Image (tube, rainbow, N blue to C red; front, side, top):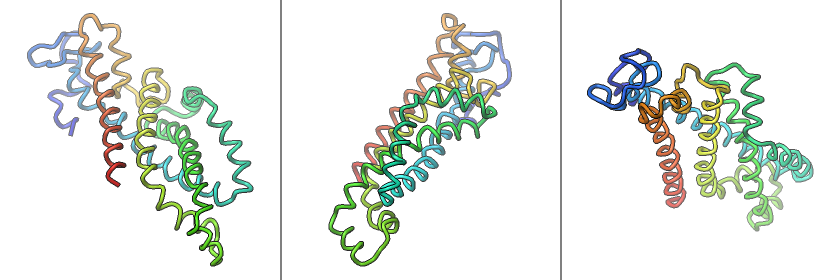
Length: 239
């Protein structure tokens, strides 16, 4: 909806640089004289879509991986040790390394955020599912001859949805942090300042002339993060 509500072409220079809010420019202009409001409305999608898609992909990979780690306890313990070492790597280091290896664009950001989030989800799911394998209903299924992998997905997974919903909100905010950091650093970015983080970085030089060019995209990032967290908490509470 945002891009369709933009009053001007977000790529077109409409006036001089850093015009303060006035008349047709409700949030003023940026460093190239482009309408800030139009760019805020048009360029918020990477901060929403990339984390959302990557969190869904990371959740699928993490849930399957976490359940397999529990089902295959012998191998799972060894894999968990490796996973713990991977989790010790700072996300920003992973972002910088993969960001410079992969070509810039939507796909690169998606891969980077998924690689960072999936191990956390796998570790979280394993810790949740591990206790259920000592439960009575699992022991009954084992006695009946069901395999541990089948039990993990059929019997254990339905009991994990509520905490998983809460974790998805946290993972989304973490993914936003990575996407925004990529925009600030210029690593694996969408390009052409086409995201809120890049808008903030590009407009810092004119902060004294038009603060709205920085405040507007920053407010969008903050409101989106808070809104998703509140929505995730409410959704988990209702389940």
